Length: 440
Image 1 (cartoon, one colour):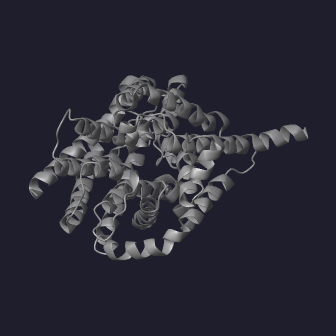
Image 2: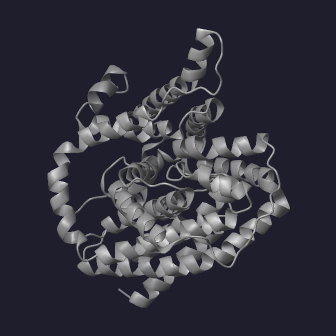
Image 3: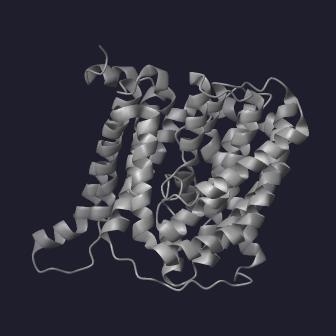
């Protein structure tokens, strides 16, 4: 184990993530999946140890840099849906740079919390897992109920007709419930009878994620008219120390909650943490959500190295597990150190990367970048999953467009993960799949 080489490889991964952030809708998991696929097919050989630490740098960099496409190009992934509107409001007010820095600050503070907890995680997490494992089904059920309850009847107008008032109030919630049902049914099909060839099964969910979370935003950007807003670049940001600590702390807890428990994404965990800690104000909300998603990605991958547990959380750990198994405790502490170092470098690079993104958006416009995003998403799906993946992506895009067209919560699309995993945990997954004719 050449420590210096592995750290340098991780820093190279940060640079790769920095360049990938300029492609709206491109998830770093897609690039990692291509690398793993090339390695498994024999087309390219990379030492598994080096590949693992390259992925550490890529996921840390992505945690910091992907907010750029979300703030300036409106192309969030599943972990960004809950804070896209406050960040987008900052962008429309010419404060996109400030929003990007707030998210970066939250991410960096959360990584510091993660570093401080590294010695305690091998002791605490196995005990927490033993206590909560029998309750996982109920936990996911409560999260589903919470998501559905956030769809509350509302109406902006007071029509004279009772039917019109009913329609105005319930059109959005009913569209949300429909989105949840369709996404859940779609997820069951993908989990129990995916149309992707078995040798590429580890990326079977990728086309659905691209279709649900990336394409609808890109399509909307192409069809919409975005005003050109002059972005103000400042030397400092208006935030208080207690907001940073409170937002970063809440985000750390939320991120670890999402990283540790299956099927809970960073957006859902951050949303729950926001309610639990009574957060108010856009700054605090953006900081906490930035912290939550950073720990969600980094924490889940750090669990892959945990010496006292053998659990795999998140797509990155699953893909890395195909080529590498950390068998020594030294890997855990080296991975934690590397993540902290890459986080510091990513934060330093965030300012010039954000300035460059502002220049690109001003020069080419969101519409042009979104067209490029659609083309790149189609190309990635073709490379990873062939034409079958395009069909999955198209279905996902239709489901993902419903919240945008009917103004319901995008969190309902997370049923594509919550429903099949929840059914499997409580033992009903195979029974439901058999009733739907997905076996045989």
